[in-house]
Length: 376
Figure 1 (cartoon, rainbow, N blue to C red):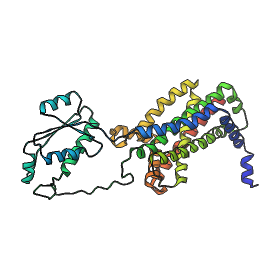
Figure 2 (figure 1 turned 90 degrees about the vertical axis):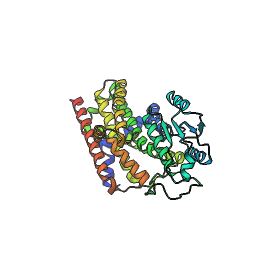
Figure 3 (figure 1 turned 60 degrees about the vertical axis):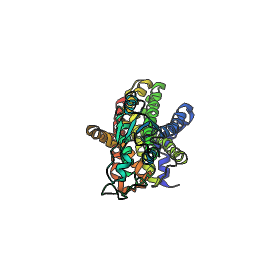
Figure 4 (figure 1 turned 90 degrees about the horizontal axis):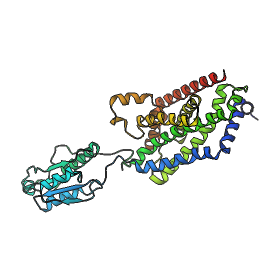
């Protein structure tokens, strides 16, 4: 046998790792918590979270009543943003329906719409948008304006573009703008955070409640070895979760995986280490598992919201963006999206990987310090 392998097998750490692995495998409730909820969370959140706006209500007051005016409405309803249009007789009725929240967008086409177009003149149309929901209003107005600017009637006398610039837009990495491709890498980090902290804190508190923690602290193994023995098996189980969830996302959502699997697993292992380390700290600070669960949710929800895994960082105020720099999930989310969607190499995200390693070292030091205080 290789001397290095023989030394590892005969070490205190190896004996403790085997002990912790057996403890996890003998506990069906803990095993269920590690393996099942993350997959369910991924599938539900990946399918339900969608930043794109669909099925908005549109109504039109068409004073022109020509083919050109109907073609314009048909252009607006060509996608899922406005699945259908309702024609209304007058502006007063349109205004009342907007006030009551029955419409998102109202369009008023004047009587001289086609005449102006045929003469090569600008044809004015009025667009009324319900701004109570600012996000929906912004999406709706952008779509309506873009559609109107691109509208080209068949019998218009001038075929030249209405603007001097004709932009050619190409969307990279996610050309279909599939929302699940954006959310799944972030959700992977979110469930690593939630599962890691909850399971690790429960493990520590279970040891303390059963009285075996004191026995562990009295063994010849150091506090670092005891911590690593508890963290390593959980990291392995969480990495299995990551692989399973990634395969499920590819099969169900058609998400690509363009990068290096090894780099992705290294980053996931580092972040799992961070999440489990935070759970160890919570377990050493809290008196009961209920307290640890409440503290875990109190910490994890801000971490998830500030990371950019659910809400894009660019949409946040500047002070929230600055606060996110101390959020380890921000760096893992960036790495996961870069590897999965862009096929990024190590040279493109090594800084984020170093930051994750620093966070992992920090939580290990804090956890070891807490264990030393308990052993004194």
